[in-house]
Length: 273
View 1 (tube, rainbow, N blue to C red):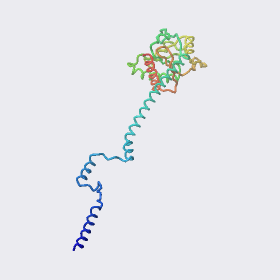
View 2 (cartoon, one colour):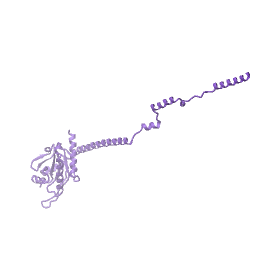
View 3 (tube, rainbow, N blue to C red):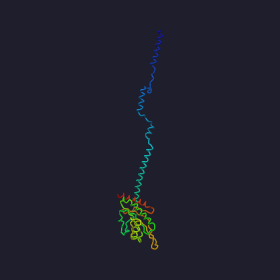
């Protein structure tokens, strides 16, 4: 009996030793208690999740087509406005340069007689805008057409005379002084406009003025007592300082000439402020 008891004792001791020396499995964080899992899940809602690098790039450069369109339209409008200002400045500069060149080439002093038989010189017209046409009262077709145009130009410009600092004066100068007396000139110009001033004089006086204004005229062959005078068909614009500014031929209609004169008037007003 003692031997058997001893064997059982040894066996029991061996089993106990195995149980003590058996390794205990280590629980991972994922197999933690339910309360720990709940805490982790709660933190997931509090802390922001990190975005992938590709998503960060998209968020950083997220520009809509609407933003691009508005930016493009704004830039185009600004460029167009700057271009408009540059063109306007360039146009004014050309007008002034053209006027400066014309001052040396065209225009000058003159001394003639009005259709009311009053002697006048170029100085009597200072302070006024002059549009001068050279012609003659016996002209069959061209002069009447040009004087009709001059009358229309006068009407267009006089509508805005309240805004003009200097008055506008249309002038008819006869290149046929042998036949065009002051009385005949007076009757002739009244058929076109009551605002016209007619000028005539001796042949020498007319020739001197035509020389200054580079106006060609020549008396044609006579048929009885009648003859035609060949002459340049040009209107000359003179500013209030008595300086030549521009000229207009038959290719310009009344509205085009009136508009061009208004531009010169505005430029003159700005340069003399």
